[in-house]
Amino acid sequence: MELSLKNLTKRYGQKVALDDFSYVFPRGICGILGANGAGKSTMMNLITDNVSRDAGEILFDGKDVLELGREFRKKLGYMPQQQGMYDEMSAYSFLLYVAKLKGMRTRDAKKQAARLLELVNLRDAAHRKLAGFSGGMRQRVLLCQALLGDPEVIILDEPTAGLDPKERIRIRNYVRDLAKDNIVLWTTHIVSDIETIADDVILMKHGRLVAHGRPQELIETAGGHDLEDVYMHYLGGDDKDA
Ligand SMILES: Nc1ncnc2c1ncn2[C@@H]1O[C@H](COP(=O)(O)OP(=O)(O)OP(=O)(O)O)[C@@H](O)[C@H]1O
Ligand SMILES: [Mg+2]
Image 1: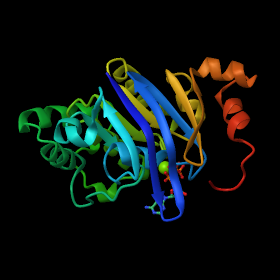
Image 2 (image 1 turned 60 degrees about the vertical axis):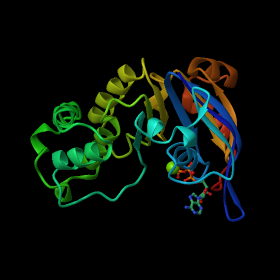
Image 3 (image 1 turned 90 degrees about the vertical axis):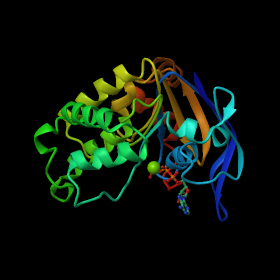
């Protein structure tokens, strides 16, 4: 199983958000690093078909995802960076709602919603309105909706932003286990989040691929001690937004 991006380009007016970008994501976790505006979310929005590409291909096992259409979308779990939530719904009913959109059977949806809420430590809050949830609690509900339906391609755009360390570690461990059989893309500014769990790391700048490799390889090449050193080595010179 692999997800392959070929010469993918996205422009917003004059701005090239993703610039002739090519990369193959195999099974496992790929950590994606880059400054604000580097093009990380744009890449994810292209894969999930939330924005349309200007050029290039996105292939899942050799077939274009646009042609696969629904067949691909059923395999996809997406946690967006920002999302308005349905404040009047409870966490549990929100998950049932998303499950319905994904075409899941009600029985499976109920079972999975309960299991996922337990997993992110929200069982006791499951039937409370989302309006009263803290930022970190909302974040965890968003992760749950991405994981409904056992997706094979899991796209997580800053999944741990705003989480306390305990919840971050819990989620990190869970996603690490999931990634054994699946393709996981994980963007973050908390470099340490992916240092121990990512199979591969890519570094992006101005919509382009700057470097990629296994965390340990990158650390050695950069002559550093950890992934933060790698980040500074490749991306530290750029002070202004991309
Ligand atoms: N809807 C849009 N309209 C216009 N420009 C956009 C739009 N979305 C993104 N851009 C521009 O595309 C570039 C890449 O943005 P993107 O959101 O992909 O960056 P990012 O790497 O996800 O950044 P961050 O770390 O802040 O989330 C930026 O210059 C941004 O201003
Ligand atoms: Mg982003």
